[in-house]
Image (tube, rainbow, N blue to C red; front, side, top):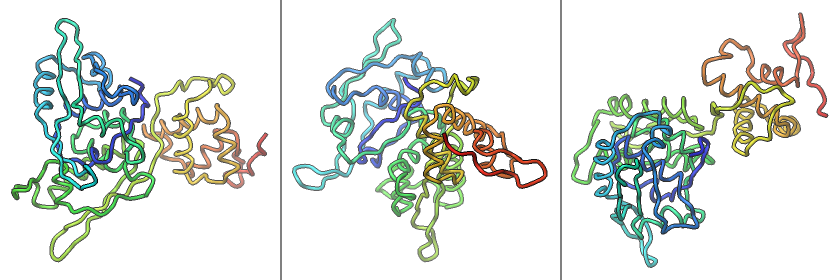
Length: 326
């Protein structure tokens, strides 16, 4: 599985009510990374070594079999349209899950009614990075990351009732049973954990705002903006050895520039048009994530100096004028 793979998921499925454990979420995410839009009826396979490599965790057959057994009976509750009418659909995703004995291979086949939410996406989809979602250890963080990814181009999510969010996270039901009735406990055990993990490990920087109605908090809005991530790149390359870079690496470098308020069009074009600069930007993003550069007076100035676009001057202003683009 490509570590940078971005997948698309129907918004109805992103916002559906269902409960997966961390292991079940990881199985589903690895499976999502394999889907081919030209093969909705295909049988898909995942392996135990593949799961372990993707998640950094160890799995045994008993653990996986118990997890997939429960996934076979997990009901996804979805608001959707059918024959022009709005319906509340209860859906099981999988038709069958087979363990091929002696091989470490798991074979999965989707329920025919589930394929429209996985393949027929058109414009109604959420895109997110699989590896980022897999890196989150909180099952609630995994869901909140996907929900926030739906709004990453808007700056914040729509306002939602806290109770509805809890239902999406399987922390409340329609019978009035609810976990974390004290908002302080919901913040501590769910929201703050999710925000910390998502901000540290993914391509999103999120926060949340709670709205009080009367004497209690009733609504929540997540703020969302993209951020550069610590991509695993070959950082030892000399500038003239930099390879041609993938689109996601250029996009990640662009997020870093925006994050550091480097937005002058000509300067952005100069940096993103140079493979060596893009590689250096991604290394810089990695160093930021791992705690380096914390003492820098100006992160943007430091980056531009490292790129050779600005140079430090002794005994004068921190940076001289930028050199002209070639």
